[in-house]
Length: 379
Ligand SMILES: Nc1ncnc2c1ncn2[C@@H]1O[C@H](COP(=O)(O)OP(=O)(O)OP(=O)(O)O)[C@@H](O)[C@H]1O
Ligand SMILES: [Mg+2]
Image 1 (cartoon, rainbow, N blue to C red):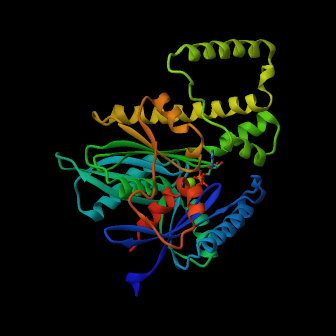
Image 2 (image 1 turned 135 degrees about the horizontal axis):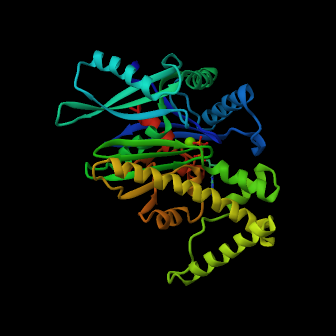
Image 3 (image 1 turned 180 degrees about the horizontal axis):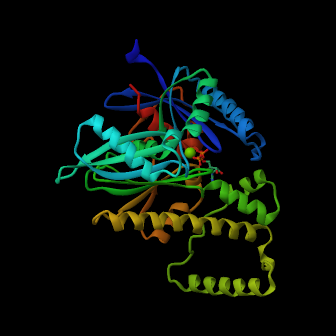
């Protein structure tokens, strides 16, 4: 009975709910069923508090219906800047003592009372000098309880609450089978949050969530062009990241000269350059958000490399809905001076006969976290 219980991987994002059901097939997995649903009807973003909870519950129901998912158990995740992830080293000790020691350690890292948080830890490995590397994750109980409320409201039984960033990493491991020498940065760019997770030596060694992603771009476009959010969102989907056109450098130099002259004029007149209405304004708004985002990714990679004892990030894998932006991998690659590619969350997996191929085509990049969650208990 228990061995066969079906599980749904439920990714409740800022913009969309993704519900994924996998099953073991041969030595790999099959995407058996999946569904996607928008959280915000009409695309606007005013809802907060209990209204937002209600919208999320409704979207989970629709995603499950769309995927014709009948599983009664859910594996899901929380995310965001309030989740604290730390990598610490402790002397080797029995497990019960380790749990205790971690509580003490956690008190040092979290800006609120230890009673207000859920604590979790994973032993990542043992060092040569008799120490253990431990991953410590703290999430506020309020956040986890609100999250569990949604899952129970649709009649599902929560089996496990993970963290988006680690679910995405789990998907990467199961689909790319990295070796111990691989060192990659996983960057999942959603609507509200970008998860950065650096994988090396067979495990995660750096994780951070930042609140710059697709919504920040749409909000910037909406402000710049005086449009409602939903319209700005559509305009964004038609745009591309600002990849330099020619390879000889002259055009790039020219355009940066022009933009610096423009910047000077703007400072002098206190207003935006005339060209900044409409499309050019939207482009500029997106460019600003993108450069803030890449700045955070770059800083994270540098921070990791400086404290990793020599490990160097070799490649970046992108996921999340915002990774679908035209030219984004190319642009990030030139900014970070690293190879950047889209992560295929179904690499090496088969796809069930009942799956709608058209829907899968438009949702693939959104599914990394949901697949990573579903993998936790599939089969
Ligand atoms: N073609 C596209 N170009 C740019 N952005 C896109 C495109 N298609 C989808 N997006 C963006 O993808 C985002 C949704 O992605 P995703 O489903 O990964 O987010 P989420 O999981 O709901 O949010 P989060 O993980 O941040 O909580 C939206 O901001 C949407 O505008
Ligand atoms: Mg997400």
